[in-house]
Each structure stands twice: as C-alpha cells, then as structure tokens.
Amino acid sequence: DQQVKQNSPSLSVQEGRISILNCDYTNSMFDYFLWYKKYPAEGPTFLISISSIKDKNEDGRFTVFLNKSAKHLSLHIVPSQPGDSAVYFCAASAIRGSNYKLTFGKGTLLTVNP
Amino acid sequence: NAGVMQNPRHLVRRRGQEARLRCSPMKGHSHVYWYRQLPEEGLKFMVYLQKENIIDESGMPKERFSAEFPKEGPSILRIQQVVRGDSAAYFCASSPTGQANTGELFFGEGSRLTVL
Image 1 (cartoon, rainbow over the protein chains, first blue to last red):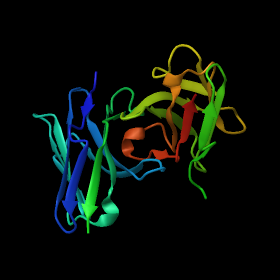
Image 2: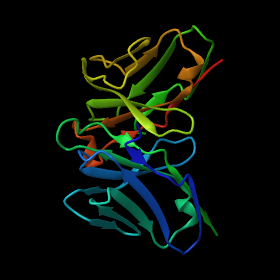
Image 3: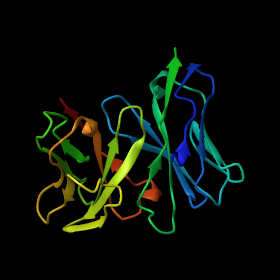
C-alpha cells in the first residue's frame, strides 16, 4: 500500500532548463509535504516543504506546487544545474497525530546534463 | 562535524548473526528516528525514540528488531538473527523537537547492512 507515489523513476534535463518532479498521494490525512534530496552514499537532506493550506511555496530556484483536489504535488527547479543531479524524495506527514512520521515515495533520479 | 553520526557505514553479516547500528544525533537534538530503505524503495519509518523512551515503534518488525536510546551514548538499532531480507540501508535522523513535518529532520549518511 503505497501512500506516496513517484511514478517517474528517472528524469533527464539539460542544464538551464526546468526540471519538474511529480508526486501523488492517496492518504487524505496528509497535510504537510516535503521534498528531500539525496546524493549517493549520503543521507537525505531537506529541500523545501509546503503545508496543505497553501498551494505554492518558493525558495530560490525551487518551487513546490500543491493541488489538494488532485492529491498531487510537484517540485520545479529552474534553472536546473548539474549539481542538482540527485535522487529526489517526496514525503508527507499528518500534522494531527503522528506528525513526526514521514511517509516517503520511492524517489526520482534527476540527471542534469551540462 | 556536528551532524548526525552513524556507524558503521557498512556492515556485512552472515545469516543468523546479530547486527548493531549506532546513531549519535545532532548536538542539541533529543529526538531520534530510524528509517529503513530497501533496494528500489523509499525510506520507511521504523521507530521514534527520545532519551530512555520508545515513543513509537509501529514501523518495526515484531521480531528480531529492537531499538534503544539510553541516557548516555548513542541510539542503537539491533537486529538479531539477521536474514537476507534485512539487507538495506538504515538511516537515522534527529530533530530538536518531535515534529518531523517542520522539515527539521536531519539524516545521517546511513548504515548499509549486507547479509550473506
């Protein structure tokens, strides 16, 4: 039972272009969403988050969009840089209840080509 | 280095042996979480601990797995009588509060267990 789904295992884009990573969720109790970035042989690092009361959150080159009715969120990276090449995990939690527990997707490997 | 420290980074065990993974949280953090990543999967929550207390172990397998976070020293994830299916990357994370959804969840580099 996969409550957070990242249906694209990989994505390849050219440097300078936009990267769009997608994530779908099924649990309507989720009300906080996060993106983590992971390089090989390292632990995940927090990138950006969004609460369900918002539909957009922006931080520099990174923007997360949330569509609650579709239970869908996306991470936009623009412009993409070679250093952005990593695995990106979408994660979700419920603020009410077990808000310390994150449910992760399987990840999308982003490759940014110079 | 004030980050989350995990050791060993790599551990090889034969079936039936015991594995012990250690985690020292970031300085000032008293909340520790263990996650497991099986091959081709996302990270899955295992257990949440505070000093001397297990808060939530709902993600832990019922048998062979145990975790502790003593008053002194690192948190330890212990796997007894390992089987091949235990081969995975085990990540420890810490936070200053018990609210991981604030994004203040800092992960270590992981311990990769291989069971032969």
